[in-house]
Image 1: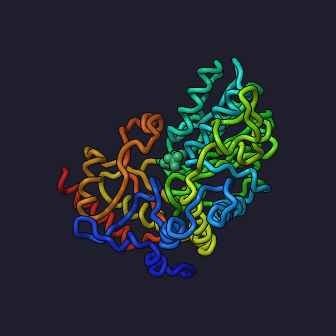
Image 2: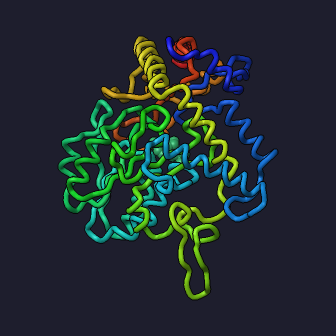
Image 3: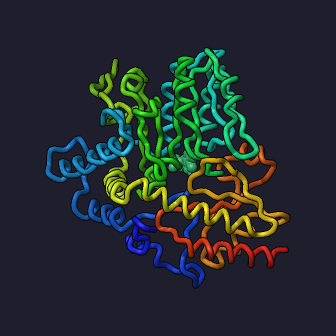
Amino acid sequence: NKVLDIEKIRNDFPILNRLVKGHPLVYFDNAATSQKPAAVIDALVHYYTHLNANVHRGIHTLAEEATAAFEATRDAIRGFINAAYREEIIYTKGTTEGINLVAYTWGRQQLQEGDEVIISGMEHHSNIVPWQIVCEEKKARLTVIPVTDKGELDMEAFYTLLSEKTKLVAVVHVSNALGTINPVKTIIDAAHGKGALVLVDGAQSSMHLDIDVQALDCDFFALSAHKMLGPTGAGALYGKKQILEAMPVFNGGGEMIKEVTFEKTTYNELPYKFEAGTPNIADFVAFRPAIEYINELGKENIRKHEDALLSYATEKVREIEGIKIIGEAAHKASVLSFVIDGVHPQDIGILLDNKGIAVRTGHHCAEPLMNRFCIPGTIRASFAVYNTLEEVDKLAEGLKKAIKVLK
Ligand code: PMP
């Protein structure tokens, strides 16, 4: 890579030094969760060593410093996705909680019998199940944009599904199972044309694509810190301010209230209205260095490197007899999914692990998508900025050997 010094980057990720079954770790399960740079790990230790206190409530020094560090991450997320206001950034446990928040608050308030919610055939279970629950409760209809043989959304079918009955379109930006980059801007514009809101599942896109929620004009955008070099248990839901303001509250408890009496409770302002209870303070504090790390490398540079890895891996894997790539969309990010004739994905996963190569096998929390392709699951290699072409060679070698053993 001409711009990024990948060896230097690798040195920032301590886990990449470890051996797995006697082999240097080759970590190709980045779509499940990314590894963490030392800056993030150090921030966790620093927080618990020097700052630990509960946020927002205390007037003592530790409470003030913890609050400042905790809130600084909100500004970093705002900048990262170019939201207009910091109070549009709601802290969540991750993408799953962000989507559930919208389903249980906006969905329960806004959906009525006969209304429709559109999702797509390549959604993660976390963008299916919450809508099933709320649609069943409200007697609304859940419809699904079909997926083509290439693993793209059938946009003609989407336009047919979209109508005045549509209240929400909830769609994944980048598929974790296939890597497909979906045309969310087109979807958003079309949905708005019918008066529907759009929620974008950004779990996979936030690390790989430039995100500008104002340019996209999406109404909600959900992300997880752990998919973008940050800690687990932290994430964000972006929502347009006027929509969030009109939404009912989610969890009840401390922090989300203004005044409480047994007769009546009034609620806090945004974003705290949606943030009941003591949050995952340390992990939010340590999320900021992850964002800064990405910003420093530059999304475009990261993307270029990941694209190079993906096209090299695609080429290498395609050469191997009996392998079929699932998902050959024109626009893809960082994910290579495939199946092998007569071989169970899990057996391949075990043999690769014996060589220190971590891939994901299975349905990738997208069972309906696997059913669409009539397969139980795939073998998925997913790439990050710290991966190398040499590691892709190891994967290809490992696959060839594993196939020989299994056939
Ligand atoms: N959507 C997509 C596309 C994902 O890849 C994931 C994580 N695998 C999720 C949603 C859920 O994210 P989390 O488990 O961090 O809540």
